[in-house]
Image (cartoon, rainbow, N blue to C red):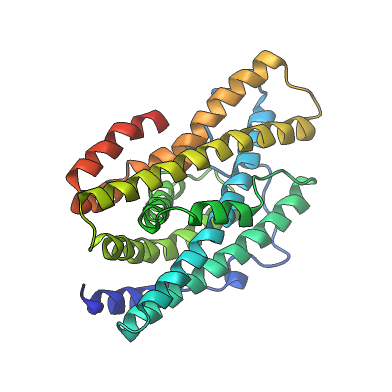
Length: 302
């Protein structure tokens, strides 16, 4: 593996680097008259039982969960990257510095998302539940085969790219501050996707077909675990909607919203990463059979 790749990636990352204060100042306010997430991710507009204001509120609750869940997954990305740095620290200084930059940016993202949560609660007027605790989720994910963890992280990086470029970038309806948060996150995750693809390939380099299959097994196991969490998040989001709107959802109404929002979450966090062409291209380099396997699973999460 050429260390020139790490040098180029590091230099690109340094050009894209930003400070939290440049993105979200302590006195910045979100615009709650606007949606936060594009409809392709939120999927709230087909909820005919909700009023226009209630659909916008649910969109904002989903936006809150979106950045908070990113904060949750950063909690396992950070230690995984640091472990990779320790394992390869002696190989090349460019490689070490690029991975340390990766880790530092993940730390910054965690801090940014925590600041966002405070800004959201200040403007929304109440807190909304989020799955966790993050440390427990991180411990469970990190207990899997390292190749599976690296694939899950690569999935997340390409998922972030797809969300911004396909849905967020040109949506003029969104709150500009929330849109800016997603743009700045996307800027750095573009570099992370390149680095994580290199980590995946390094972890797979000494494996035979069976070893790679075990890594993909672990990746799918992590996905199933996260899918269970997404079901829990839907319930938390609907609880928050009831509180915000001051009314109890009927059993049938809640059931319909639960089903629609779970599938929306599945696409947002699972399907959009699993089916990303660059993610599949990395799998192809590891094992064409494993790429075909994932392509067979992905439609469930569309």
